[in-house]
Amino acid sequence: MSSGRQVAESNGAGSQQSSGAAGKGSRDKNLSAIYESVSEAIIGHRLKPGARLREDALADVFGVSRTGIRKVLQRLALEQLVTLTPRRGASVTRPSVEEAKDVFEARLLVECALMEAAAKRMTEADVEELRDMANQEQEALRNREQRTAIKLSAAFHARLAELSGNHTLAGFVSQLCSRSSLILAVYGHSGHLGCESHDHENLIDLLANGDGVRARDFMKRHLKSIESSLSMFDEAEEAPDLRDIFASDA
Picture 1 (cartoon, rainbow, N blue to C red):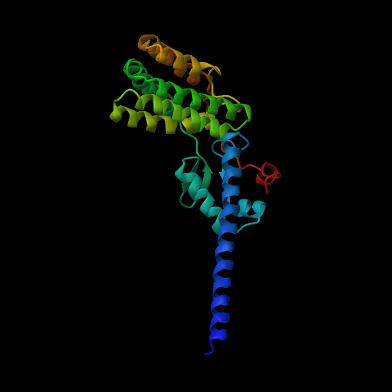
Picture 2: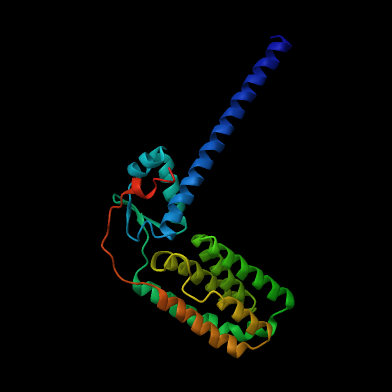
């Protein structure tokens, strides 16, 4: 085989590999966009808790294969936004009212107890970090990015727990905050997180001044305010019009 032919065939193989890689990247990007659309619909309450998510209907709406939709649903299931049930398919996850109350009771017991230790250990750098996190959360709310705001709020509370120095309890708080994110997503109200917009800033001020007792009491009011804002009641299962919900996303 001549060297010219070898080069041509080598270039051809390289082009095929490049084309395949580009195609895969395009598919991944498309599935990521679908994932964002569905997750935003859940957080924004366009898809209600318990709503059935049929693979064939979603595939038709977004113009992709059922295999692709299955990957999206599996990713959402890992984040506990979707529940996958054998022979029944996918549905928007709905934490029970009892579970939601248990989670907030646990948060009251643990997070409040950590505030005095956090206040004693707080440095100027920690205060600046917390203020930056609070500002990002408020910016997300102003931009109506509910899912981002919920995640940032959970991260704020988890970081506060870490600053107490008790890594075991901080890990537990992180798990509770993740579960709370889903509870807020399905029981909360679009556009806010169930607390005053300046709550986190006020809490930071107390911690920065070393006032752990008042920070503990403030945290208690803060968490109770969030819980009381939730609309926790049972709803009948529904089969939503997916084409209507995702008309602007497909």
